[in-house]
Length: 236
Ligand SMILES: [Zn+2]
Image 1 (cartoon, rainbow, N blue to C red):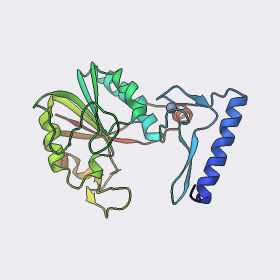
Image 2: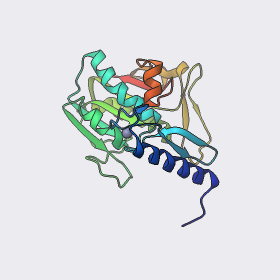
Image 3: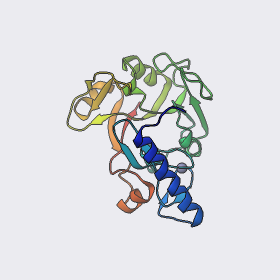
């Protein structure tokens, strides 16, 4: 085994201690909306620069944004009074599968260039799908992580039925225009901005939504969700 960074060691020790405490007694201080786990604290996660505490669910591996989305998707569809017939989840996060599947008639996953199991292998810039063939596309940190999103926007518009939706978590800045960023290890190509959102995603009707807006501060605290998780909603 290679030598672990001290932060990774601290992280493991902390997580192991939490696991031990939770085995001794039942806690309901935190709950995961993705898998129903209850416990004392979400687990820590070490990245190069820092350690994030209270980040990850020990049962399903959900992070903060996944827990926000698990609560947001049902709320969003219910508020609009829609139950999409066919939803395709691109680069699917397994911890969200059960939640999304319950919101629609047909739930399909697509993984492109990855070995992970999925129903489809769609290249978002050239999708092997007929025109007007699905009702919603879900994709998180995909659009901001591809070199050119122009063909992806055109393709998503083409395959969606009129009234169809894209719900996408992207790196986002309020009060700014979309800009390219130097590509580092996280494969981020651009940060989207509120100022040119409609222009950038034309011909879609584009808006930004806070996936945590419907939750009280107490509910966010219990589910380990930050105050703002921006989702870009594109309506055909
Ligand atoms: Zn979980």
